[in-house]
Image 1 (cartoon, rainbow, N blue to C red):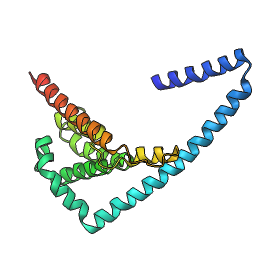
Image 2 (image 1 turned 90 degrees about the horizontal axis):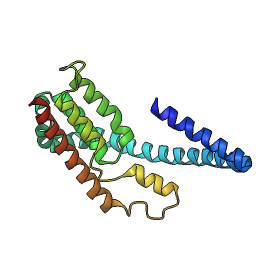
Image 3 (image 1 turned 30 degrees about the horizontal axis):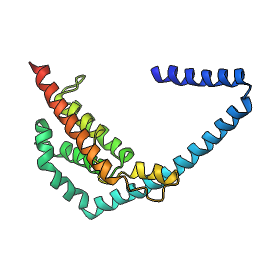
Image 4 (image 1 turned 45 degrees about the vertical axis):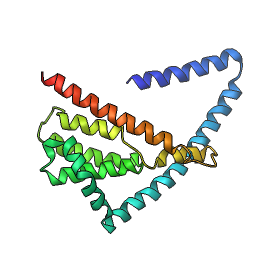
Length: 192
């Protein structure tokens, strides 16, 4: 609802400014150019998403996804102790984390929703500590390969779209550590 009000207000303000300044042609031109740029960006990002979805499918069929899940299990068991014995839920969480590590936010979303659905069965109508931790880990994920950002940079004409890797690694690691720390602290405060 709030976003509807914000976007409607921005559109109305733009129209009003164009009318007052007598620049309706410029506004129409900018709107059409923006729409064309959005289509180009969407197509380029769809290509990158299809590529990495294919990579994830190959990883699953080759058994690499299961090996990555095994590698992540010790960490995930500590983050989600309530579900350590639920292999299906842990596998879904591991797949979500794996997709996020590869920078596939769009591909990670269905996996995260499936994990959340499984987790919510234990506490219907209430977001438990583990579900909150999943949301934090999914939102502030560590990205080894930021494919979406690289696709946007490439679409904008960058010759070296992956030169941001060190900055992405540091900031994503810090955001995950901050999020996990905050989730743990708030879980303890909420119980007290």
